[in-house]
Length: 304
Ligand SMILES: Cc1cc2nc3c(=O)[nH]c(=O)nc-3n(C[C@H](O)[C@H](O)[C@H](O)COP(=O)(O)O)c2cc1C
Image (cartoon, rainbow, N blue to C red; front, side, top):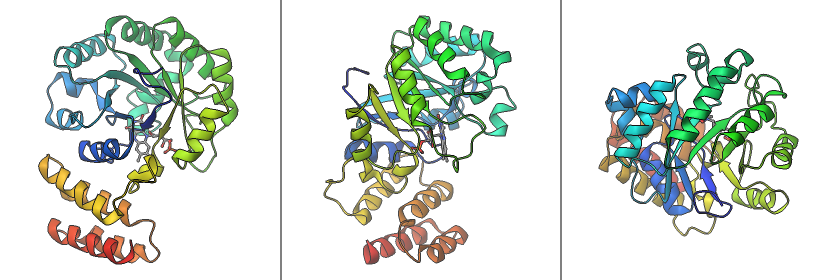
């Protein structure tokens, strides 16, 4: 069981995409667990509006985790204390996977998987696992060589880490390189903490097959949920146009009705239609938010 759930489906965090309104829609359609996008622990401690907005939980999110970026034990403790005191989340997750240069240059995310950081990482795992009263999890890539991930998972096992989401790619791998299913299997054979499989899972049906045929404890779906929240429940009765309308309403009800987020979501919702590249280019150059919304809705209603 993870967070009291058997074989849950996670909406994997996607920066700028899994904003609170999108998480809420996915949760209402069928995602069991939602996670904030990566959030600088320092931003949370300094009460920065951008960080606080992104970690708002809606009551429709059944189980919600806040994902932290930090390489500092004191920062980790302070942010855990804030999250717990204010009851902001059901679990706290440490990001050990982001390979973006901006993040790794700051010695954060996947950089914590570099062998020279192993002592630091161990301290962070020990601190997280012993400070929280709610579950503390990790989300990781395999590391910089395939030798890394099992060692880290073993440390996690010893340090009260509740579960680990394993994106089965090396930190340096691009998305063009397929994930290696053997890594999930090796992890569940050798490690006792629950493993959430992540990477290239295109839909719930494939996720269910993975759960059926392995000792994997849950599934995290990221990119396949973009513009496609029905990935969590193909029988959800509303059309894509209707889902988009609801999403826009949720964005208006929160602090996310802005050109950046509306353009991202509109492009995502249109992406699977043939000839959508013309429309998506048009949307990218549009300035008026209501025009972007009506252009997207009309297209979804016509083609959806
Ligand atoms: C645009 C984008 C943003 C992402 N942002 C995050 C993030 O904030 N935190 C995180 O742990 N992973 C992040 N990821 C990684 C995904 O959560 C996931 O691990 C990865 O995409 C593999 O799963 P998928 O094949 O289902 O997308 C991001 C990936 C993408 C493509």
